[in-house]
Length: 409
Image (cartoon, rainbow, N blue to C red; front, side, top):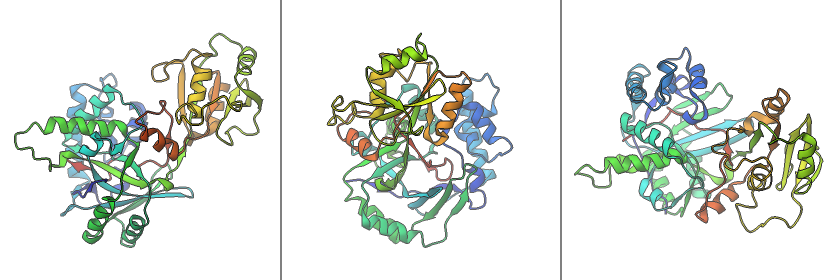
């Protein structure tokens, strides 16, 4: 069963929500965050990326950065102001991007269920990133960015979510990137019905936010050292938004490589022809699984895996991102670990294939690979086997914004 818990969200007013809401801390670097927050003292990036208010040379993991986060959080509480609801509540959060919409439930989920794998994972986490968010949570006494969860949708939950949306929203705005954000608070009756309905949901899955979830577990390990710990404290739960799986949109996570490992474009095509069926691409994006599009020397090529050369039963090796790694990046281009090799970069599908063409055409990269997106079914199948997907496999859009709902621990 999946346990969700109501919480007293710390949130901005309807009028200030567009100013406070910020992109997730981990989709921008320091300089990008500084540009986005420029001229807006209410931007939540001052809390989630506080180094933007310190000198350029500041170590982003230094004591000064976490102290600045706490200082900026207190300032934002007063200036926005951020308000806390009178009673623990659940919230309905709807995202819209173009013609796509998805609607989830903002709630606190059980860290016990995360630790016991009722909340399933599909990514490995890095200790340095866990260290950072764990310290951020403990310093602020709050979880300020939600973990994006998914579950197999149910009609009874969908009906309750629709009913909550009949009321006046707490916020309704379009962010600068064109994504619409709407949040409603559930009535106490609907809150209780939603909590009960989730008792019949057997499993939930992390779609995005593995480091935040792992950090919440580590923060709980520290906080429960207090002698009065009883398991019911707020720090035993972490901030989540749960979306039905049939509403999610996964975009490809594409790759660009800076050089051809000593080969000319012609030589590279020759060695590729031993592993793939190669043709001129009809479009820069693959039309189906087992097709990879490649931009090389000013032209798009289609790389198709010959029939019978992959294992369709293995959910990991049959992923196109795995095929690319095992047949091209490692053996031909010498990129064994995409997480650490500086010769490879990643381009989220939201940026489109034109961005990759530009990188190759201006010499920043030698070759680009456009992938067919991973499906939610792929993600769930891998998580159910307690295995992990290759790094940088999924790019979820639209993304939740930080600062709209915070959970005090």
